[in-house]
Amino acid sequence: MEITPAELKNLLADNTTIQLIDIREDYQFEDFNIGGINIPLDEIIANIDKIDTSKKVIFICNTGKKSAAILHALKVKHHLTNLHSVKGGMESYAEECF
Image (cartoon, rainbow, N blue to C red; front, side, top):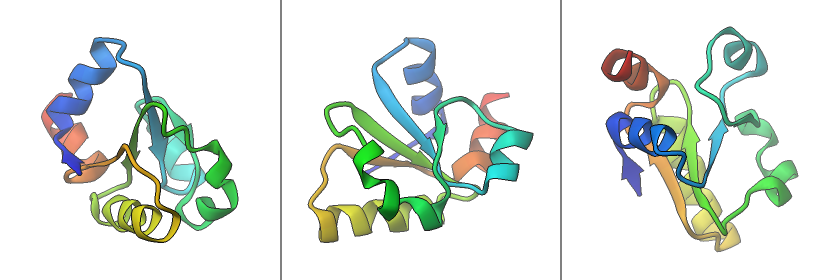
């Protein structure tokens, strides 16, 4: 399921219990992030135990494409639920929310 950057901003502002996972590379996360944890895309499966589906889990990448793809893979192959992706990714979040 996709959420908009504005919806994510509201969740963060309301201190809603979520798990934000930034799947960009380490250097991108260090350069600019909006919180959450950084698990680069190629490390997601190895760190699947860090995904807490008791919370709303939100994946974010640069454009929204990679986070949507990993969300789909985790749902289909690993049967995880309560997963969301930010539409347009960090680029849209930066444009719309700053």
